[in-house]
Image (cartoon, rainbow, N blue to C red; front, side, top):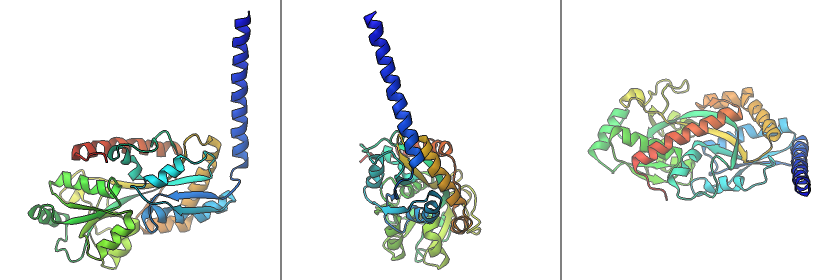
Length: 328
């Protein structure tokens, strides 16, 4: 009898704990947001991640009734800023503007201070956009084929910049190298913005850059676009062919930016943030700006975003292993 009473007592206690936890989560969701919200950008200002965050922050502030502040925390292949969010309180007041690089990092770094799947709660994929293979105007190559021929004639002599080892921009070029049989020299930077600036200055001669960051320089002639990394052409640059149609069939490397919260953030809070982010993404002014810069505004659901992350991790794990990139 006593054992049954103890077991019953434990069950009641467990139920009470569950009820209290559910009550607290509900109360937290009802009062959210109770203070300004920080959106951590894990890269330097001026890159596509930063531009995307600052594009939707004002409207999110309006819809949520609290200021949404964008904060740059660059370094260590975007790991420093990502870790800050993974370790933050799971109350929705600290968010991450994530980038597709986070689906690559688990395979190029030996030990991450967080688990990419467990420690982040997907909220919404804000935009999807192709990268663009661009070269410095001083380079004679005017097509993808000409660039490949030049690279094969000078193995390892053509330098390209990226946002860092293991970044989406880096892996786009790794995939390009493996599918064309060329060898380039990689120069990693702490973010895409400094990589762009050094290429304009002629310190490197090529890179794959996001449409958001390189389209202004393509238009003013400071960069030459050779090919898009998507399977379809862009309405923003209809004359630029895809790499796939330029002699590298099947090549594709699409980048995305999206909002994530710390893992275990209450579903009700995630829903509130998603609704505000989706509305901000659909705002006519923001939508036009995204489309003008070659990005496709999405505002997808948490479940859709989780699926994108899962699929990308499977893809990039294969690319990293095939290229023989050793975890650092």
